[in-house]
Image (cartoon, rainbow, N blue to C red; front, side, top):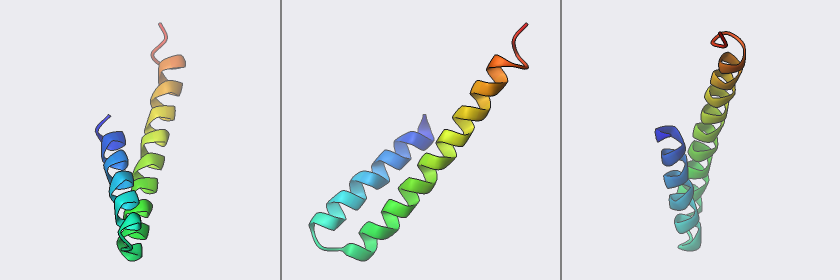
Length: 57
């Protein structure tokens, strides 16, 4: 859950930076949040598939 927590932190930073007009920082932190979220989803799906197939005994 740490990756998801960092993605949410970067999302909040992006929103706050966007509100205050720092569009460059906002875009960069939104990109980081998006990448971290996609990494989290990939890891989750891989572990879910492993749980349903390989580790089913």
